[in-house]
Image (cartoon, rainbow, N blue to C red; front, side, top):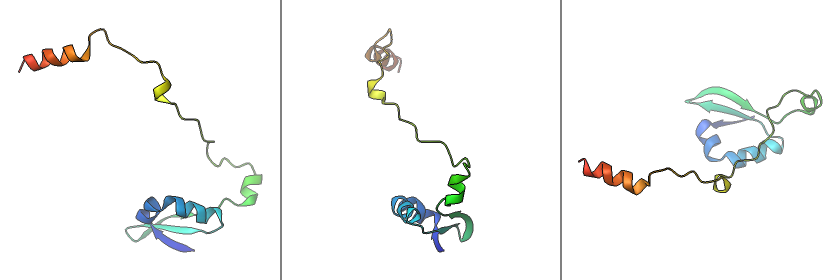
Amino acid sequence: MKSITQRELRNDNAQVIRAVEAGESFLVTKNGVSVAVLRPVLPSEKEAGLPLGRPARRRVRYAEQPRVTGAVPTGQILEELRGER
C-alpha cells in the first residue's frame, strides 16, 4: 500500500482516484500521522448493497434561474450611501 500525504491527495486527486479505480490502495497521512485508507470498493461490498454514499445529483444552473430585481435600483442605493459620507 502506497503512502501519500493529505496535500498530495488534494493536489493530485484525479490521478489518485484513477489509481484507486485501477485497484491500488493508499494510506493517507496528515503531518506524518495515518488518518485514512483509500481503497477500491470490494465486489462483496457492492453486492451486499451497503450504503456507499449518495448518487451524484445534477447541479442547479443559476444562469437559467429567473432574475430577482429589487424595487430600488442598486445605483440609487449606492448614490444615497455615498452622499452620507
